[in-house]
Image 1 (cartoon, chains in turn red, orange):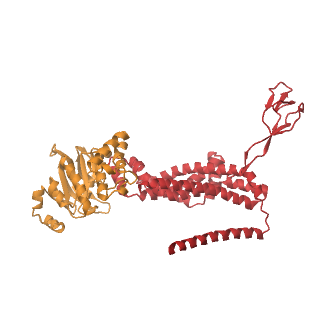
Image 2: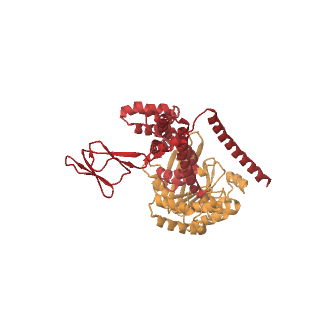
Image 3: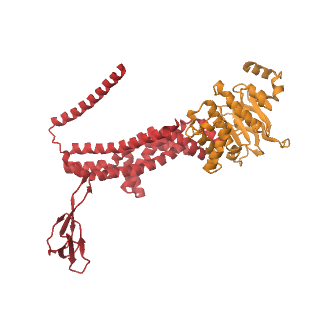
Length: 315
Length: 248
């Protein structure tokens, strides 16, 4: 009983600290005379801005029953029929010229921040797939008995881990991108997956080496060749053991993808910068961007925890 | 080879094993084993008996000499060692069950992946083998939920699933609690009475006396002495006497 009340006390301390921090941020923002305009943010995530439909040719507008706008062409083109619209901008019988606005249609539009989120997600998922493949092979090569493979892998890992990602992105985009004629997205994905692959290689290596050599011997003594033993016995066990560090690496990849904004890929970070320059509301935008990154990384973290739980059946 | 007898299923001749660090683990070891024979190898730790056993399925390569398993040379570069290993089952001191598979999964894995048997067939055979080693009730348990003796019996069933001609046992009871030794030895005895060719490295002198057709004594990487159990245990070879004096 004594113990439990102590635990409760410390949980209360935690809540108090969090509230204190929140108040600190609030007080800080008050002290700098900043007007918060949170209401400006949602439209950059999703909005219902109207789009204008314009006449493709010169002609006459007629409104038929059932609220249907028909524009008949002066030159015998097929008439334009618009059945659904929100605002009518012409009257019955008006003469219209090419490019004149006819109607406004309101629809749900995805804002720039959401496009940025989608781009970040695309970058991360594609890079992740390549990084895992690169990391798996580099990790296997790292423990190979063949010196050529081993030294190649060590060189790759040391080169990549020894240089900053930002510099690698510039090299991939400006040098390799120019030589091989890569577009921005490909260069960004290549830089991210080669970078993350080096770290995954080390995780794969340590995962495989943590499996007792007896497992490989047992598999080989049953007639499996090296590849069969790896695929059926060693890697499934190593996979389970490396899930926690892998999860960390995947989350790093999502966050590192923000650096590709320097080569003008409009990911979440670059979208945030663009929205800041049009709203002059940097505080709100960067908080919103941080929250959107948190949704991605939090979702991933949750999914991997679920997987870990499912794989723990044999423990 | 002129002196090859028709009955010998294992022929090891003049085996030398020198590790890269200079350790001379096997010195001119020769041993022929006949089909259906049970050979027990005993000796102090570090005598090379496990190393010798492991050369028989090439988990340990040899520095010199020749090994033939059922007329197939293991030292020939053209020999597919994986094919040979399908015929030579092995049971380890530390079980080495695959922890991510159930007992049945362990037994069925190799027939499915190596012999390309349909899963249903491999699992049916696996169930029968597990029944044979007395584990019909536990086949869906993971190794972590089995006792040491049960794990070792699964390991025996797993090796048998490849229908080997030879079974190698590398101190199969040394890692077991005393009360579980019996159940594993019983399975091995029934295997011997089924006519399986077995090579057993063990410290179980009772098993050697009761089941072995021949007992081999190794010391310092040399094969010192081989005899039938009756003569073996009544021998007055001084090196053997010294060892038996220590273990009995």
